[in-house]
Every structure is written in C-alpha cells, then in structure tokens.
Amino acid sequence: QKEVEQNSGPLSVPEGAIASLNCTYSDRVSQSFFWYRQYSGKSPELIMSIYSNGDKEDGRFTAQLNKASQYVSLLIRDSQPSDSATYLCAGRDTGTASKLTFGTGTRLQVTL
Amino acid sequence: DTGVSQDPRHKITKRGQNVTFRCDPISEHNRLYWYRQTLGQGPEFLTYFQNEAQLEKSRLLSDRFSAERPKGSFSTLEIQRTEQGDSAMYLCASSSQGTNSGNTIYFGEGSWLTVV
Image (tube, rainbow over all chains, first blue to last red; front, side, top):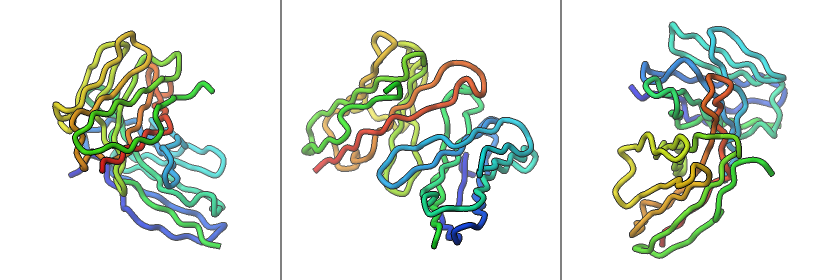
C-alpha cells in the first residue's frame, strides 16, 4: 500500500455543487494531514490542515479525518470554476514527524 | 514578500551540465525541505534540514544530487551531470519546528528544470 493514495480523477462537478475529494493513508504517515491546491504550472498552496478526528470547516472548505478507517477527505461547497485545480493530500511522516508524504493528487474540474 | 523564495524559476540545460538552485526560506523557519515533482505526480521528498543539519535524505537522491544549508538560512540544491530524467519542478519549502499548526509546511514557487 502506498503511504498516501488518491484517485487521480478528473473529478467533474457542476458549478455550485459540492466536490468531494478523498484520500487514504498507511501507518507510515502520522495523524496530521494537509490539503494543498495546485494550479497547473504552479506550486502547491496550503488550503487546510487537520489533526483530530472529525470535521474542520474553513469557509467553503471542510476537511474530515477518520483515523479508524485511515481516511481523510476534503469537501468544497458551492464549487466555482476557480476551484478547478489538482488537490494534493499529504500526511506527516510518523517516524520523524517532519516531512510530508504526498498523494498523486486529484484533478478537479468545475464546469459551467 | 516574506514567503519562500526560489531562484532561478526556470533553467534549461544541456545533458551533462551541472545546475544549482537556491532557496531562501521564510525567515523565522528553521526547517527547510526540497521536493521534486514531475507531471501528473505529487511532490516527492528529497531532503530536509533543521537549521544547518541535513537530517534526512531520500533514497531517490542519487550521488549526483547534493544539498547544503551552510548557515542555517538559505539552501542550495546542486545536480551534477544532469540527465533528461532530472527534468522536473524542484520545490523548496520551509516550516518551523513547532507541533501541529506550528510546523505547517509552505512551498516556494518552484524551479523548473529542463534537460535537453
């Protein structure tokens, strides 16, 4: 099993809908997770972090963490065309608690 | 601008040449990371420093790659005898040493390398 796994997509949602992005992880990454957004040709930009079981909301974004299932998700409400990007899930390394291990990213397309 | 700064942003080099990238982290951050990203993949960890000490290197980092952070501030990543497979975006990132929210990792804009 890869340390962090994501479906590469593309995930296509209509404007105004909820986009749901999912990520699973192995025991080699710790219980802190990060979602980054990456536009084509640009570097990753941090959207949210989550450390505890449950939900964390920030504006239109909600991150969800389920430690028992080793599952983390990102919900984007009222999706906008400007949300079209690749979303990277990352977990912090369990051993050193320093570096992040990334999934391959899910490409999101928000259609008009 | 107080973010992570990388230079050069783009580099085209001939196979076999050496290239060096520079990274200036966020000033109060003592951890500095190098990642590499190719098309369709997530960033892959290369190495990281805490202050001037290089604490971890990935097995991906062949002996043609060397990184330094001599005074615990800026860092350089050198690739010797470049190969076409080295073509990628090289990302630098930094964080503080705190726990959880205190050590969020922030990326620079990346340095694109094309080996021809």
